[in-house]
Length: 345
Ligand code: DAH
Image (tube, rainbow, N blue to C red):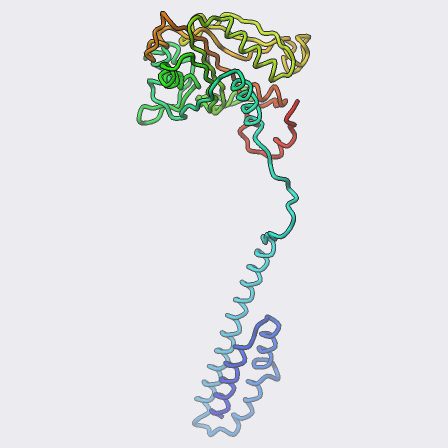
Protein backbone atom coordinates (compact mmCIF):
# COMPACT_ATOMS: atom_id res chain seq x y z
CA UNK A 1 0.00 0.00 0.00
CA UNK A 2 2.88 2.33 0.80
CA UNK A 3 4.11 1.93 -2.76
CA UNK A 4 0.67 2.75 -4.09
CA UNK A 5 0.54 5.93 -2.01
CA UNK A 6 3.95 7.03 -3.28
CA UNK A 7 2.91 6.27 -6.83
CA UNK A 8 -0.20 8.43 -6.52
CA UNK A 9 1.87 11.19 -4.95
CA UNK A 10 4.38 11.17 -7.82
CA UNK A 11 1.61 11.04 -10.40
CA UNK A 12 0.00 14.06 -8.79
CA UNK A 13 3.31 15.95 -8.78
CA UNK A 14 3.78 15.47 -12.47
CA UNK A 15 0.16 16.11 -13.39
CA UNK A 16 -0.12 19.37 -11.53
CA UNK A 17 2.92 20.63 -13.42
CA UNK A 18 0.95 20.31 -16.64
CA UNK A 19 -2.09 22.24 -15.38
CA UNK A 20 -2.55 25.52 -17.23
CA UNK A 21 -6.12 26.57 -16.52
CA UNK A 22 -8.59 26.77 -13.68
CA UNK A 23 -10.76 24.16 -15.36
CA UNK A 24 -7.86 21.70 -15.60
CA UNK A 25 -7.05 22.33 -11.96
CA UNK A 26 -10.60 21.53 -10.93
CA UNK A 27 -10.47 18.36 -13.02
CA UNK A 28 -7.26 17.35 -11.28
CA UNK A 29 -8.75 18.07 -7.86
CA UNK A 30 -11.72 15.80 -8.56
CA UNK A 31 -9.47 13.14 -10.04
CA UNK A 32 -7.53 12.89 -6.76
CA UNK A 33 -9.80 14.16 -3.99
CA UNK A 34 -13.26 13.51 -5.47
CA UNK A 35 -15.67 10.81 -4.24
CA UNK A 36 -14.41 8.35 -6.79
CA UNK A 37 -10.96 9.85 -6.95
CA UNK A 38 -7.58 8.25 -6.57
CA UNK A 39 -7.35 8.74 -2.81
CA UNK A 40 -10.72 7.13 -2.24
CA UNK A 41 -9.59 4.32 -4.51
CA UNK A 42 -6.63 3.53 -2.26
CA UNK A 43 -8.72 3.28 0.91
CA UNK A 44 -10.01 -0.31 0.44
CA UNK A 45 -6.37 -1.44 0.46
CA UNK A 46 -6.31 -0.63 4.18
CA UNK A 47 -8.13 -3.90 4.74
CA UNK A 48 -5.10 -5.81 3.47
CA UNK A 49 -2.62 -3.89 5.66
CA UNK A 50 -1.48 -5.61 8.85
CA UNK A 51 -2.89 -3.97 11.95
CA UNK A 52 0.44 -2.61 13.21
CA UNK A 53 0.97 -0.74 9.92
CA UNK A 54 -2.54 0.71 9.68
CA UNK A 55 -1.65 3.81 11.72
CA UNK A 56 1.39 4.62 9.55
CA UNK A 57 -0.61 4.08 6.35
CA UNK A 58 -3.39 6.28 7.67
CA UNK A 59 -0.89 9.04 8.35
CA UNK A 60 0.70 8.68 4.89
CA UNK A 61 -2.69 8.96 3.24
CA UNK A 62 -3.59 12.05 5.26
CA UNK A 63 -0.24 13.62 4.39
CA UNK A 64 -0.84 12.97 0.71
CA UNK A 65 -4.34 14.36 0.96
CA UNK A 66 -3.25 17.54 2.61
CA UNK A 67 -0.31 17.93 0.21
CA UNK A 68 -2.76 17.74 -2.70
CA UNK A 69 -5.20 20.11 -1.02
CA UNK A 70 -2.49 22.68 -0.31
CA UNK A 71 -1.06 22.48 -3.82
CA UNK A 72 -4.51 22.85 -5.40
CA UNK A 73 -5.44 25.76 -3.11
CA UNK A 74 -2.24 27.68 -3.79
CA UNK A 75 -2.60 27.18 -7.52
CA UNK A 76 -6.21 28.36 -7.28
CA UNK A 77 -4.96 31.55 -5.63
CA UNK A 78 -2.45 32.01 -8.38
CA UNK A 79 -5.14 31.71 -11.03
CA UNK A 80 -7.37 34.18 -9.22
CA UNK A 81 -4.56 36.69 -8.99
CA UNK A 82 -3.69 36.22 -12.63
CA UNK A 83 -7.34 36.75 -13.58
CA UNK A 84 -7.40 40.07 -11.75
CA UNK A 85 -4.17 41.18 -13.41
CA UNK A 86 -5.47 40.13 -16.82
CA UNK A 87 -8.60 42.13 -16.23
CA UNK A 88 -6.59 45.21 -15.31
CA UNK A 89 -4.22 44.75 -18.22
CA UNK A 90 -7.05 44.36 -20.66
CA UNK A 91 -8.90 47.34 -19.30
CA UNK A 92 -5.83 49.58 -19.37
CA UNK A 93 -4.31 48.25 -22.49
CA UNK A 94 -3.38 50.87 -25.02
CA UNK A 95 -3.44 49.79 -28.58
CA UNK A 96 -0.77 51.97 -30.13
CA UNK A 97 -1.87 50.95 -33.60
CA UNK A 98 -5.30 52.55 -33.20
CA UNK A 99 -5.78 55.85 -35.04
CA UNK A 100 -5.76 58.90 -32.74
CA UNK A 101 -9.29 60.13 -32.23
CA UNK A 102 -8.78 62.74 -29.54
CA UNK A 103 -7.10 65.38 -31.70
CA UNK A 104 -3.67 66.82 -31.15
CA UNK A 105 -4.49 69.36 -28.44
CA UNK A 106 -4.00 73.08 -28.70
CA UNK A 107 -2.26 75.99 -27.07
CA UNK A 108 -3.60 77.39 -23.82
CA UNK A 109 -5.88 80.41 -24.50
CA UNK A 110 -3.44 82.55 -22.55
CA UNK A 111 -0.55 81.44 -24.74
CA UNK A 112 -2.55 82.20 -27.87
CA UNK A 113 -3.31 85.78 -26.77
CA UNK A 114 0.22 86.30 -25.44
CA UNK A 115 1.72 85.28 -28.78
CA UNK A 116 -0.69 87.55 -30.63
CA UNK A 117 0.30 90.55 -28.51
CA UNK A 118 3.98 89.67 -28.78
CA UNK A 119 3.70 89.55 -32.58
CA UNK A 120 2.15 93.01 -32.66
CA UNK A 121 4.88 94.50 -30.49
CA UNK A 122 7.68 92.71 -32.31
CA UNK A 123 6.37 94.17 -35.57
CA UNK A 124 6.72 97.60 -33.93
CA UNK A 125 10.38 97.02 -33.06
CA UNK A 126 10.08 95.64 -29.53
CA UNK A 127 12.16 92.80 -28.11
CA UNK A 128 10.48 90.16 -25.96
CA UNK A 129 12.24 89.61 -22.66
CA UNK A 130 11.54 87.16 -19.87
CA UNK A 131 11.55 87.86 -16.16
CA UNK A 132 12.29 85.52 -13.28
CA UNK A 133 9.51 84.07 -11.13
CA UNK A 134 11.65 84.09 -7.99
CA UNK A 135 13.04 87.56 -7.54
CA UNK A 136 15.15 89.53 -5.14
CA UNK A 137 13.43 92.02 -2.90
CA UNK A 138 15.61 94.62 -4.61
CA UNK A 139 14.32 93.93 -8.14
CA UNK A 140 10.71 93.49 -7.13
CA UNK A 141 10.56 96.62 -4.97
CA UNK A 142 13.61 98.82 -4.36
CA UNK A 143 14.78 99.04 -7.96
CA UNK A 144 11.36 100.23 -9.09
CA UNK A 145 11.19 102.98 -6.50
CA UNK A 146 9.35 101.08 -3.77
CA UNK A 147 11.74 101.38 -0.81
CA UNK A 148 11.26 99.42 2.43
CA UNK A 149 8.47 100.85 4.59
CA UNK A 150 6.91 102.53 1.56
CA UNK A 151 3.15 102.07 1.88
CA UNK A 152 3.04 100.91 -1.73
CA UNK A 153 4.52 97.59 -0.60
CA UNK A 154 1.21 96.92 1.07
CA UNK A 155 -0.61 97.36 -2.24
CA UNK A 156 0.62 93.89 -3.16
CA UNK A 157 0.32 90.96 -0.79
CA UNK A 158 3.64 89.33 -1.31
CA UNK A 159 4.65 85.69 -1.01
CA UNK A 160 7.98 85.92 0.80
CA UNK A 161 10.43 83.03 0.69
CA UNK A 162 12.43 82.00 3.74
CA UNK A 163 15.62 83.32 2.18
CA UNK A 164 14.19 86.83 1.84
CA UNK A 165 13.43 86.54 -1.85
CA UNK A 166 9.92 86.86 -3.25
CA UNK A 167 7.67 85.28 -5.83
CA UNK A 168 7.50 88.27 -8.14
CA UNK A 169 4.37 90.28 -7.52
CA UNK A 170 4.50 92.08 -10.85
CA UNK A 171 6.38 91.94 -14.12
CA UNK A 172 7.88 95.32 -13.17
CA UNK A 173 10.42 93.26 -11.22
CA UNK A 174 12.25 92.73 -14.52
CA UNK A 175 12.50 96.45 -15.36
CA UNK A 176 15.87 97.12 -13.71
CA UNK A 177 17.55 94.12 -15.29
CA UNK A 178 16.22 94.97 -18.76
CA UNK A 179 17.08 98.67 -18.46
CA UNK A 180 20.66 97.73 -17.53
CA UNK A 181 20.88 95.19 -20.34
CA UNK A 182 19.95 97.69 -23.05
CA UNK A 183 21.03 101.04 -21.61
CA UNK A 184 24.08 101.24 -23.87
CA UNK A 185 21.97 100.32 -26.84
CA UNK A 186 19.29 103.02 -26.87
CA UNK A 187 16.44 103.28 -27.66
CA UNK A 188 14.89 100.56 -25.50
CA UNK A 189 11.65 98.97 -26.59
CA UNK A 190 10.91 95.82 -24.67
CA UNK A 191 7.94 93.80 -23.54
CA UNK A 192 8.13 91.15 -20.86
CA UNK A 193 5.20 88.84 -20.22
CA UNK A 194 5.28 86.70 -17.13
CA UNK A 195 3.65 84.86 -14.31
CA UNK A 196 3.11 86.84 -11.11
CA UNK A 197 2.03 85.83 -7.63
CA UNK A 198 0.09 87.56 -4.89
CA UNK A 199 -1.37 86.32 -1.68
CA UNK A 200 -4.94 87.09 -2.74
CA UNK A 201 -8.32 85.84 -1.68
CA UNK A 202 -9.49 83.90 -4.71
CA UNK A 203 -12.68 84.78 -6.54
CA UNK A 204 -13.87 85.06 -10.13
CA UNK A 205 -11.71 88.14 -10.62
CA UNK A 206 -8.65 87.30 -8.49
CA UNK A 207 -6.06 84.56 -8.64
CA UNK A 208 -2.91 84.15 -6.58
CA UNK A 209 -1.12 83.20 -9.79
CA UNK A 210 -1.75 85.37 -12.82
CA UNK A 211 -0.07 86.80 -15.89
CA UNK A 212 0.88 90.32 -16.81
CA UNK A 213 2.46 91.69 -19.93
CA UNK A 214 4.61 94.71 -19.27
CA UNK A 215 6.32 97.05 -21.68
CA UNK A 216 8.87 99.87 -21.55
CA UNK A 217 10.03 102.44 -24.05
CA UNK A 218 13.08 104.55 -23.24
CA UNK A 219 14.62 107.15 -25.53
CA UNK A 220 15.27 110.83 -25.75
CA UNK A 221 12.00 112.77 -25.70
CA UNK A 222 9.63 109.92 -24.98
CA UNK A 223 6.26 111.34 -23.97
CA UNK A 224 2.74 110.29 -23.02
CA UNK A 225 1.89 110.60 -26.71
CA UNK A 226 4.19 107.66 -27.48
CA UNK A 227 2.54 105.62 -24.77
CA UNK A 228 -0.93 106.32 -26.12
CA UNK A 229 0.14 105.61 -29.69
CA UNK A 230 1.64 102.21 -28.92
CA UNK A 231 -1.22 101.09 -26.71
CA UNK A 232 -3.86 102.21 -29.18
CA UNK A 233 -2.05 100.52 -32.04
CA UNK A 234 -1.63 97.29 -30.11
CA UNK A 235 -5.25 97.19 -28.93
CA UNK A 236 -6.61 98.03 -32.39
CA UNK A 237 -4.66 95.16 -33.89
CA UNK A 238 -5.66 92.74 -31.16
CA UNK A 239 -9.34 93.64 -31.34
CA UNK A 240 -9.12 93.99 -35.12
CA UNK A 241 -10.77 97.41 -35.18
CA UNK A 242 -9.80 100.98 -34.36
CA UNK A 243 -10.23 101.39 -30.59
CA UNK A 244 -10.52 104.47 -28.42
CA UNK A 245 -8.53 104.81 -25.22
CA UNK A 246 -8.70 107.29 -22.39
CA UNK A 247 -6.34 108.06 -19.54
CA UNK A 248 -7.34 108.66 -15.96
CA UNK A 249 -4.90 109.70 -13.25
CA UNK A 250 -3.51 106.84 -11.18
CA UNK A 251 -0.72 106.16 -8.76
CA UNK A 252 2.27 103.86 -9.05
CA UNK A 253 5.63 104.45 -7.40
CA UNK A 254 7.50 103.52 -10.58
CA UNK A 255 5.76 106.06 -12.81
CA UNK A 256 5.26 109.80 -12.62
CA UNK A 257 2.74 110.77 -13.76
CA UNK A 258 0.78 107.51 -13.52
CA UNK A 259 -2.41 106.64 -15.37
CA UNK A 260 -5.10 104.06 -15.72
CA UNK A 261 -5.75 103.46 -19.38
CA UNK A 262 -9.28 102.44 -20.33
CA UNK A 263 -10.40 101.16 -23.69
CA UNK A 264 -13.81 101.90 -25.13
CA UNK A 265 -15.53 98.53 -25.11
CA UNK A 266 -14.73 97.00 -28.51
CA UNK A 267 -17.72 94.66 -28.28
CA UNK A 268 -20.48 97.25 -27.96
CA UNK A 269 -18.57 100.37 -29.05
CA UNK A 270 -19.26 101.88 -25.66
CA UNK A 271 -23.02 101.35 -25.65
CA UNK A 272 -22.84 98.98 -22.68
CA UNK A 273 -22.77 95.18 -22.69
CA UNK A 274 -21.84 92.23 -20.47
CA UNK A 275 -18.14 92.50 -21.24
CA UNK A 276 -17.87 96.13 -20.07
CA UNK A 277 -20.49 95.51 -17.38
CA UNK A 278 -22.66 98.18 -19.06
CA UNK A 279 -19.99 100.82 -18.35
CA UNK A 280 -18.92 101.32 -21.97
CA UNK A 281 -15.24 101.51 -20.92
CA UNK A 282 -12.92 98.76 -19.72
CA UNK A 283 -10.05 99.42 -17.33
CA UNK A 284 -7.24 97.58 -18.99
CA UNK A 285 -3.81 98.96 -18.51
CA UNK A 286 -2.03 100.83 -15.71
CA UNK A 287 0.77 102.90 -17.17
CA UNK A 288 2.76 106.09 -16.94
CA UNK A 289 6.04 107.88 -17.50
CA UNK A 290 8.90 105.94 -15.93
CA UNK A 291 9.92 107.61 -12.67
CA UNK A 292 13.40 109.23 -12.94
CA UNK A 293 14.47 107.23 -9.88
CA UNK A 294 13.87 103.99 -11.79
CA UNK A 295 16.02 105.18 -14.69
CA UNK A 296 18.75 106.42 -12.34
CA UNK A 297 18.77 103.13 -10.42
CA UNK A 298 19.62 101.37 -13.68
CA UNK A 299 22.38 103.87 -14.42
CA UNK A 300 20.48 105.80 -17.08
CA UNK A 301 20.81 109.60 -17.30
CA UNK A 302 17.29 110.74 -16.49
CA UNK A 303 17.99 114.28 -17.72
CA UNK A 304 18.77 112.99 -21.18
CA UNK A 305 16.40 110.04 -21.41
CA UNK A 306 12.78 109.53 -20.52
CA UNK A 307 10.53 106.55 -20.79
CA UNK A 308 7.04 105.23 -20.53
CA UNK A 309 5.80 101.91 -19.20
CA UNK A 310 2.63 99.90 -19.05
CA UNK A 311 1.54 96.78 -17.20
CA UNK A 312 -1.19 95.03 -19.12
CA UNK A 313 -3.26 92.50 -17.19
CA UNK A 314 -2.78 89.64 -19.63
CA UNK A 315 -5.28 87.36 -17.96
CA UNK A 316 -7.91 90.04 -18.16
CA UNK A 317 -7.24 90.45 -21.89
CA UNK A 318 -7.56 86.69 -22.36
CA UNK A 319 -10.83 86.60 -20.45
CA UNK A 320 -12.22 89.44 -22.51
CA UNK A 321 -11.12 88.11 -25.85
CA UNK A 322 -12.11 84.50 -25.21
CA UNK A 323 -15.20 85.11 -23.10
CA UNK A 324 -14.04 83.66 -19.78
CA UNK A 325 -16.01 84.84 -16.78
CA UNK A 326 -13.83 83.33 -14.05
CA UNK A 327 -10.06 83.93 -13.94
CA UNK A 328 -9.62 80.70 -11.98
CA UNK A 329 -10.61 78.71 -15.06
CA UNK A 330 -7.40 79.84 -16.74
CA UNK A 331 -5.30 77.91 -14.21
CA UNK A 332 -7.63 74.95 -13.97
CA UNK A 333 -6.00 72.82 -16.65
CA UNK A 334 -9.51 71.63 -17.37
CA UNK A 335 -9.63 70.66 -21.04
CA UNK A 336 -13.40 70.50 -20.99
CA UNK A 337 -13.46 74.20 -20.17
CA UNK A 338 -10.78 75.20 -22.65
CA UNK A 339 -12.39 73.32 -25.49
CA UNK A 340 -15.50 75.48 -25.21
CA UNK A 341 -13.60 78.60 -26.10
CA UNK A 342 -12.73 79.40 -29.63
CA UNK A 343 -9.55 81.20 -30.53
CA UNK A 344 -11.51 84.19 -31.77
CA UNK A 345 -14.37 85.58 -29.84
N1 DAH B 1 3.31 96.77 -11.65
C1 DAH B 1 1.97 97.28 -11.57
C2 DAH B 1 1.06 96.28 -10.86
O1 DAH B 1 1.29 95.13 -10.97
C3 DAH B 1 1.41 97.53 -12.93
C4 DAH B 1 2.07 98.65 -13.64
C5 DAH B 1 1.60 99.94 -13.47
C6 DAH B 1 3.17 98.43 -14.44
C7 DAH B 1 2.18 100.99 -14.12
C8 DAH B 1 3.76 99.50 -15.11
C9 DAH B 1 3.26 100.77 -14.94
O2 DAH B 1 4.80 99.34 -15.93
O3 DAH B 1 3.84 101.79 -15.61
O4 DAH B 1 0.16 96.67 -10.22
